[in-house]
Image 1 (cartoon, rainbow, N blue to C red):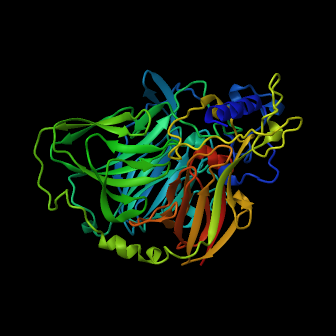
Image 2: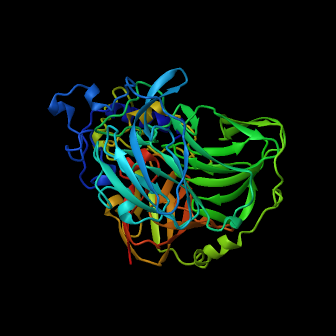
Image 3: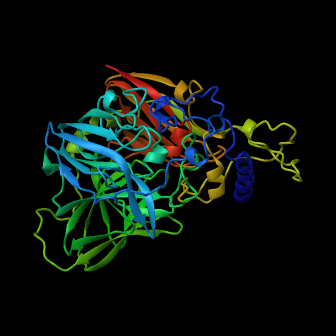
Length: 563
């Protein structure tokens, strides 16, 4: 079947399913980290059913009202010394995007929240107070903290109820760029603006190149559409994730960043979107890629663009010698777009001690990565397959007038139908990445009642929360992640491991030549990615797809590291 026909058939199935289905949780119960938590903190972990409570339809949705809300404030940067205490309040605010005011959720009134700059090896105490309309936590994404401070309900803490606070002790053992966001109804609260950046400076600043400035660039998109309010009792857009229709950089639409001619700038780039992949580029500018999620590459390299899935980060440097306006772009294959601009004005800057055109080999990074490099050729220890399951019992397929004689629903048993010849599998994108939502109606019709995304341990056939991996502290585990191109909807998945770090050892059988520590890696449809996971941090942890709606649709599992 061609791609157009498969889209049509799946769209018919999903649109018929609509939003009226009751969810059957048998066999794949949803754990606390991703259940739909209601506004009432005493109502438990599932929202009341409007059919039984008699509430209006509006009561089943999170508020979109901006009445009485303060406008978001500019993001600030806070340099925090070792042992510092910092207070954070998550609450509603309003922001004007285009000609429309929209309701946001903000940390300390800003989107993104405060940039917290710390030094490697330090520790801070952070108190989060929840003044939003949903229970919350704070997940310090990528940090190797204790599991009680990792922000995962049901593992380290209970959700922070509305009006309550929670104290986190955050340690920063690794230099690099990290971020924070909720781990309860992430599809809603993160999309609404709850995210922010940690910049962890290395103890030894000499491991970094000299630059004139450092600038964080937080990439996001938001769906500005009054018809697309969030339901309290279920998650929608679970097929592809919730794509936005407005791109944001540092929480703003097409912001301008002033640059002085001759400046060399280090950019900390982060993708906080629910599902969108960014191909980060600066027009007519070569990027020196120096670092990834959790530190520096062994060897710096030049690139025209850096592809970042949700949750992934990059540290890049660029030099600006010409006066003019330069676009920051999402340089995707189809319909590349400008998302911000750099305005380079004439002026003078102090010369730096190193030549920008020289690529450096990072001996400190090489030493730090030696243990992982020694395991690149070891046998595979664990195997994960990424796939999706449609609950066909909830998908009425009485397509009056259709000839089903050549239809096969990809192995799904559809009573009363002749299934031969039809597959619900969509054709794999050429590069394995869905850059835009090309099936918006179908995507909107999908929800946690009719779509279940799965991480399957192919050695045991256990899936999602039935997986029970256990490692010992110090283990180095090779995990092979295969993104099934024959699933009912092949697309990319950014896979994230909490509390640990890993290297990508091979992609599609080709060994990695230049390592960097990571905690999230994008696995395109049809690809096989091998990682070496360093089990360095004892505790119970999560691994999941970082497309927010996929995680909410069960795509996660727990693992344990024993000390």
